[in-house]
Every structure is written in C-alpha cells, then in structure tokens.
Length: 341
Image (cartoon, rainbow, N blue to C red; front, side, top):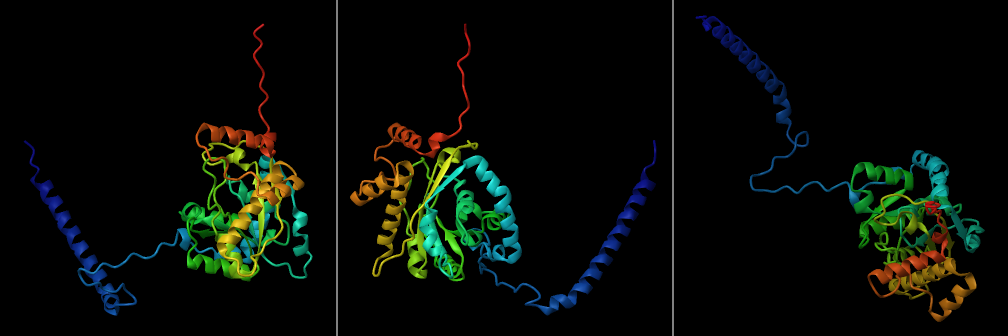
C-alpha cells in the first residue's frame, strides 16, 4: 500500500502558512482602518442604539423623481432634435393628424410677450403625448412640460430619464396632486413654461372618456394662466389601452379658445366648464362648428363618457361613434373573398 502521510503533512503545512498570511493581512487592514474608525460621524454612519428602527431613505422614484436637469439648455437642444426629427416623423406616419382651431390662439400669439398656458386634452392613448407635442404651435411647443403619471413613467430610473428627456415629463400623482407637485408646477408656469395636463388622470379604460379631475382648473386659479381645451380624436383606435400593437390611422386635434376662471368661481365650477368645452370640441370634431355650438348652448352635446348602459351595447355604441370621426378613416387591409370557382 502507498503511504499518503508525507502528502497530508505537506498540505497541512500549506494551510498553516496561508492562515498566517491571512492573519497578517487582517492585522494590517485593521491597523490602517483604526484611525478612520476613531473619526466617527460624519465620516462614518452614526451608531444606532439597539431597539431603534431607523426609517428608510425616501425613494427618489415616482413623484420624488428630480426632473430639473431635463430643462437645461443641453436637454432642451437634444429634445428639440428628437421632437422635430424622429417624433414628428413617427406621428405623421402613424397618426396623420388634422389640426383645427389654431386660429383661436392667435390673440395670445400676437401679444408682445406670449404668456404660458395650460393645454387640457382628453386622453385615450400613449400616442396622445407625442401627438400634442408636435401639433402645439410656437412659442409654446418649445416650452412644454407634460404632467405624467408618477407611478407609470417614473417607476424606474431608466423610464424616468427617458420620459423626462424626450417628453419633458414631470411626475404627478394620478389621484391627487400633492402640495409639493402643485408648487413645482406653479413655479414652472411662473418661469414661462407651458403645461400639458390630462384632466381625466389617465388613459380611457374602455375607449370612452372619463370624468375630469380638477388639476388644470386648480393650477389656472393659482397662476392666472389660461386653460386651452383640446379634443383628440382617433388615437384610441390606433393604440388604446390594452392593445398589443399599433394600428396606423388618422387623427384630428381640435383646439378651443383659451379659458380663465371668472372672479369668485370655484375650482369645481371652472373644471366643469373645461369639461364642457372639451365635450363641445368633441362634437365639433364629429360634426361642424355651428352644430356643436348650437348643441352646447342647449346643453345637448354628446357626452365624452358615452352612454349610461354597460356591456356589449356600450362597445357597440363606441364602434358607431368612431365611424363618425377620423378614426373611421383608418387604413385597413384590403381583403378579398377567395376565388372558389
């Protein structure tokens, strides 16, 4: 039999030498770190007594995401190239927009110093934002800030950075605008930035509109900026909520006359007037200006929220409704019956 004793003794010797080297290295590291350990706070984290729970650092995502860098000169130049190049080409190819009502903004454009405004469109699709950015006229188009859902566009650093750079997006809570967000938006408007805010708070879940929230009306009352109602038709059938792929089609964007709250008017009443104005623009998009104004005076414009009933009848009504607008002009694949003869 072979004798393995010398081999085992050799291995044990190697282990002992490695242990000595490790101990020497550990002692050297401790000697180097001893002065640093003695420095204490603020060079090291403060010690925490046992039983004390230290609250976690606040998240820098969501509504706390910092977007100030996206309004720097370099970011504005990069965004201008993206908007006037790839984004405009994408919107033209996928949505073919027809724009109506820009003459209603002419009075503001003729002022020596054009004031910032708040654009308040309906919201059916992710296509709405690049569409509105590319059709808003100067001098507002180069100073647009888009109020975006904090829980969707700013849930990760990558999405937040892309949204801030390409759309100049600003994070807000869907349900209620916090004091911090409203103060930031007010300061942006006072600094000359215009705002795009969707009063519905999010995309339509079923293709019909939703009740308006008061964010645009509240900011207008706080800042004195005019609200421009906007109706967007056709984007819901291009890439509505739940759709898996884009379906190129035609869209129509109708701008309304600027609105301001009257003296003593509450945010709730002004918000109702904004919703009524967007409703009338929706009627105008499907009919004509005169018919829409007559119905508006009588309070008979078709509701953006659709019929009261539910189920298949509501979806059927939506299909008929879309046939009346630009969505009905959507390019469709030419189909032929097979030749069985």
